[in-house]
Length: 205
Image (cartoon, rainbow, N blue to C red):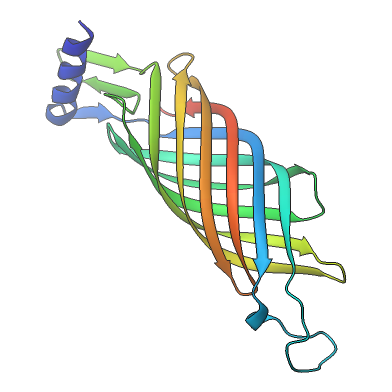
């Protein structure tokens, strides 16, 4: 029976005039850890001297972020997203803020909650369990503390994310996601890992 419903849904999404793939909002918290290392060739001595007297600094910025994401489904198995986040609590003095955009590919038979209707039939389906993975690109702003001063840098990041969503009802779900990215900035390079847990909310569904 489930296979029949899925077949009808896939056919209806292509044939019916009123087919809706609702957008999705996500609100998550979790853990973010950024390992960073300054590039020696990009450093300048603060006392005005020249040469290679500046010692590169490296460290780790760890925090609990609030992560907000807007996700738009282009079809039943692919979506595009925008997300951003920043620290709520931090275990180090450093601060890491980020923004990213990317694509999620869903590996379950149906990745998006879907509503399809015409004059004769109406189908509304919220998949119970969905899982996904995909690439992302973004930028971050890192404020970090060396032994002598506070510095900051803008970083361009490229990474991957993957996760799963469990639907509580047609509107709400529980989401778990992990992500990894590498970044290059004006002063440093970085490697960031995120583990996030939160809720999803389906819009217009």
